[in-house]
Amino acid sequence: MSGQQYELVVGDGFARDLMRIAADARADPSKIFLRQQVLKEMRELASGKSNGYHALGYEAGKGDLRDCVTSYVQSDGQKQADHRLVFREMPPAGPGLPPRRELLAIKPRHGSNGIYAHVCARLNRHANDRQPGLNAFGDRPAGSGGNEKQRHEELDAKRLVAHTYAGQVPLATSRPLDPAAFGARGSGSQPTSPSKGTGKHL
Image 1 (cartoon, one colour):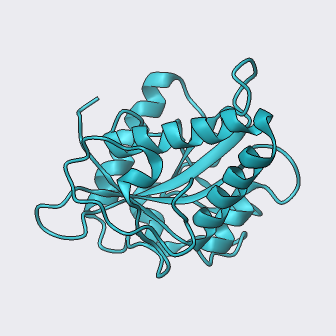
Image 2 (cartoon, helix red, strand yellow):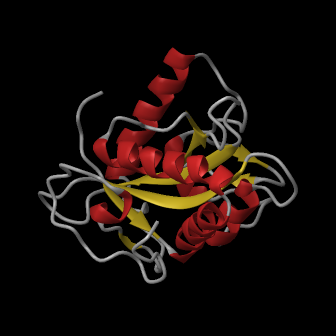
């Protein structure tokens, strides 16, 4: 890992996902592990320790998410990861500032009305439409996979595109997330107010 620091930004949709996970953890001790793992992945995305698991693509019916990346999160340490966290890489907000990662959704991997439908809705994208501006990210089909080396190379290549692509801007509802809200340390940036509705107890 390069040690690159990132500023996390979140919109209302992701904030609602976090509040649901936090509420579930307060009501049911068996849900605490998921909350811990989500916060851990957020810290690692902010520190650059994690770059996500694989890049997403386009598939009719699932939408054009070629500028998005998914991470996997476990709700049970003894089982395979069963949640996805989807985010987008972003250029810095200004000169001398770190690049950004916009967190879009955290949802179960399986079941109806899956996470990609939520992400498309939050990005105002129709599930059957290609986004012409996303041609800058290539034309990778959804689910094309690849081994670990290939996945990392693709993530690296798409990150370079995202950090220089003028069309890659956060949603209107997205705001910087206070690093203290998810236990980040040593980010090198001043804490900022979380998006409205994130709450202090994530």
